[in-house]
Image (cartoon, rainbow, N blue to C red; front, side, top):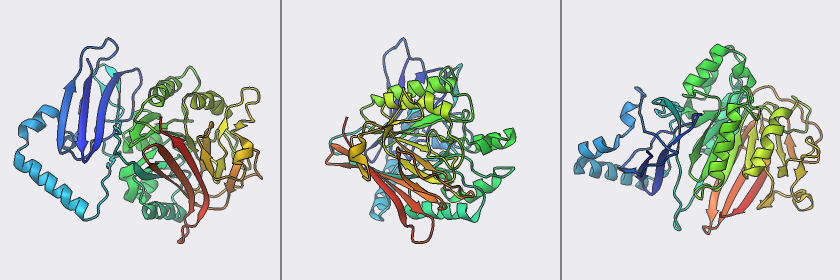
Length: 411
C-alpha cells in the first residue's frame, strides 16, 4: 500500500512519500501548514509503507491528517492565513524553513522495514525558483570559523552544507556552539575528524538526527545527496547501493533540475595538501556521470579549488576528461556542460594548506584564504535553469575570489 502526504503552503507543495527499501533516507520537517490532504493510492506489489511520527521533541509539529481536519476550526485557519499575510506584507521571504536539528522524521525505521521519505516540489508554468545555499568544510573551533558563520549569516542562505572536519577538538560541543545561529538550516557530512572518536561521532549523529552517515533530501528543485568517505563505500557496500538507487530515481524526476552531491575527502585535487581519495573517485565519479550530477562539493584539503566540468576517464583514472576544453578555458560560464564541476571548499577556519600550481582540469585555486561558497539558483523564462557559484572571502568586504555559472535547459 502506498500513502502520499501533500502539504500545501503558499504554492509550495511538499510531498512526503514512503518507499520500501533496505536503506534509510533523510527526512525533513514539514513547514507550517494551512491545509493538509491525504491521498491513499491503490495497491502496489512493490510498495508497502506508512507514515509515523516518533519524535517527542517535535511531536506537535507533525500534523496527522485526519486529526488536523477534525480539530481545526475555520477561525484557526483564518487566523493562520491572516498571520501569514502579515508576514508577507512585512517583507518576509516566502520560503520553506528546514529544521534539521529537531526533525521528527529522520532516517526513521518504520515498523519492521526501513523507508525512504523525501520531499519534492511540483513545478507549474507560473512557478519561479530562486534561492541560495552555502557550503564550507574544515572549520575548527577558531575565530576564523566564527567569521565563516558571520559570512554565512550576511549572505542569508536557506540551507548550509558543512563538508566535514568540524570541531578538530576532543568533543563536538565547541563547534555546535559556534554554528548555533545557523544550526536550524545546517546539514553535515562526516569527516575523518568526526570519525576518529566513536563518542564524538555519536554526538554529531545525534545532534543532526542521523542514523546513517549517508542520506539525501530535496529542497525546492534541487536534490542533495550526502555521502561518507569514512564508512564503507565500495560498489558492494550498502552506501553505494543506496546512492545508485537514489540517483537513478531523481535523475528522471521532472521536478528536479539540479543534483548536488557533498562529502568530505577529495575525489580530485591539484595536490599540495592531502592526497585524493582515489578509491572513492573510481567508484562514484562514473555513477555521478551516469545520472547527470551537476555539482560535487568536497572538503579535506584546507584550500579552495574549482575544476572545469569533467567526466570520468576509464583509460586513465587520474586524468579526467575536461568537457569541451577549448571552449571552457578561462571561461566562467558553462552552457549545458557534459561534465561535473567539483569544488573543494576546505576553507571554514582550520589552518590553511597550499595548493599545487594546478592540473589541466583545474580552473581556479585559492590558498591562505578563508570563506564560503555561495550557490544561487534561479529559473529564467521558465525554460532555463541558472546556477551561480561564488567563493566569498570571510573578510569584512566579502570579496568574491572566484565565480562561475552553469546554464541548463529544462528537462
